[in-house]
Image (cartoon, rainbow, N blue to C red; front, side, top):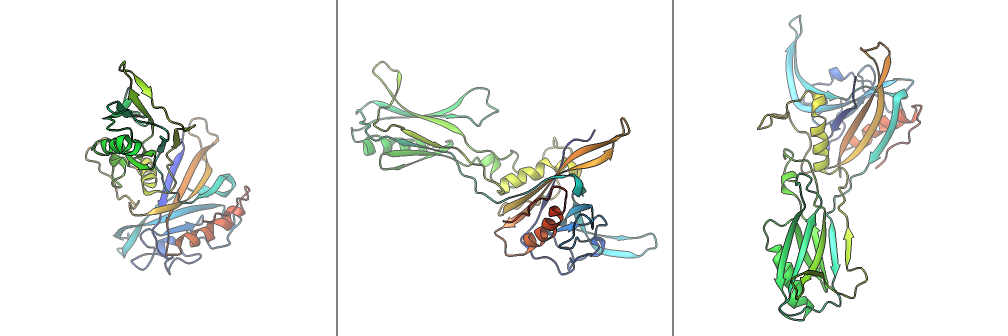
Length: 348
């Protein structure tokens, strides 16, 4: 039986091409002056450009089309040559009567986790060993508890120069650290760092993840045991969790890789990887439009009609100087409003 199918169409910051007009047949939009690389177009059931204001009564099925940078030439059986045809990526058919969800997700920046330690009232004891211990929660591949511990001996009873400066320097001197340390007054802040294995390029081996941790500031007592430091703050540690954001290039890249099998790319064991062009740009950020629908099909096992869930995601570059996002939403919003679900239009 069919499983959920995901398709991602990724646009570029461009204007709608002059040839892409209401009712134009997609196969006639060719050449360098036609459908552009990274241009997103909504098509009707006959693969013609869906006109703004068209409803489900005009076309009960639509497709989302993405132009690519690849072109090809061919000759038909009569020997007539057709040149510079642009390869396109098509979504699965979207049945208006089966649409279950139509939403937009605006770009939101990802923010790293921070632990802010308010050490007001802490009086360091000269010569006593203090430590910052960081316990990481994001390393699922590690079978145990992965920690990093930074130790210093207080040089005076002055909190800032006798302890905080030493802890800060100790943490930041570690080349393999997964947090950065900063301070403001009597506060010490630990902030998660970017993970280089998944934030360097669109062909990173690992999926995007962020540093998640718990931190502790302790001291060694006379018996050699770890003890919590004593300060006057009622809540010495204020934690702000990591936020993964939305529409970042890392998240869009991961979506693109996950839907590769639906483009026929199923061998992910060969190294180095052999993939087609990646359409995500590492210099871009994206607004996302998500369409969830069902598709009717005749089941081969028992010969009756079943439903297969489909998800279609469109990524628009933001901020944008072109009109592509508005043009596509101008096509989609009216059509979606006419569906049985009467979906509210998407606006960013």
